Image (tube, rainbow over all chains, first blue to last red; front, side):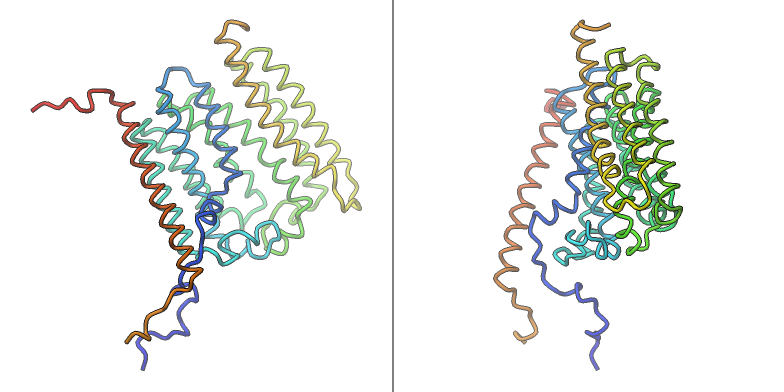
Length: 312
Length: 51
């Protein structure tokens, strides 16, 4: 009698890997990582106080690797649903290039290293916030909310909104009202961004059994929710001026961008049910990426103008 | 007993070599980051230890 029943062993348990380094980089979700790097950098640059530029670069790198680690853990856990969605089927785990175990080990090791590095090079408040961000994304969002509630990306969006708070804390060692305003902007930006995607990818999500809002509450309810969040986002974009850490120069840019967001959302709201091409939803998805990038760039430029004495 | 061992294919060996090189680069980069970061955080005092 065989001691190990080969039939009972998982296929991936004993096969030799053909994964290339690029597959492991893909596990880090580089595009999401780039947004995390950018928003964390804005948080770090906006924070009062001086930090060594080298330590700032290392801090941003640690935050980026931590975000990437949470992406790897997400891909480990979600391999089953990624396999049935066109957008994600070619990811390393569902495509069979990287085993689930490799993705899990990779994610856990990078999580530990990124948190420890940030703690040692910046401070332990920032490190704790990074650890919480990874935990929130991998456990609260991926393992719990994503498959159980249409509010998944609303609550789970907190993980994506935390990088500027971590960046701010890397300099100051604290969480302040200003960093929470940056958090709020990304938190309110996330639902309309993902629901615009979920509208024109609702077939994918339905096949995977993910309860995204368009699949559960219908397209009409989703469009209304998108519009409400767009209004809230447009107002929250002005909060840095109200809170006193940005000038009217930024305020004008934020107002124009906010009006644009509301206009694109209005186009989605008016989109007929019979519209299968869903161009307004695709346009809103594209604009939402531009919105966040330009808004945070405006904050940086505004701070630069103030420091040069060109704006008061 | 040789037949009990799995013989890696050329593609598997090539992939393993690439992963090894990438891991070596990542570890070397980490060592440099910790070294430079320690200098930046602690300064020249890093090497000043009481005897």
